[in-house]
Image 1 (spheres, rainbow, N blue to C red):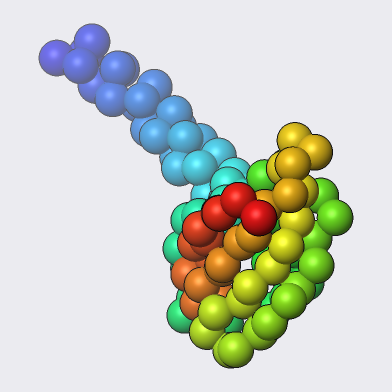
Image 2: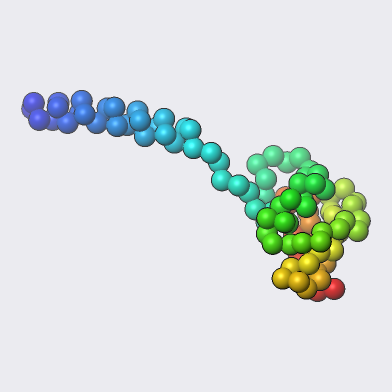
Length: 96
């Protein structure tokens, strides 16, 4: 009985420490293809930043119709056209 009580006493601080460590960890960065936590539209700047993080360069907005943003960019030096859903951040790539 003493061994069980002793083990339980030792385990209590470990459980509290683990939950504290989990509460302090930063959330992972979102990819443009992952839906954002909120339902607000992404700004053009946020879309450009997300695409840069995915390896796109020379990003230019061609048309912004609110829910959909059409862009041109380069990926690995090749020109591509992109259509981004401003609500979810998901995008489609086509050759230009």
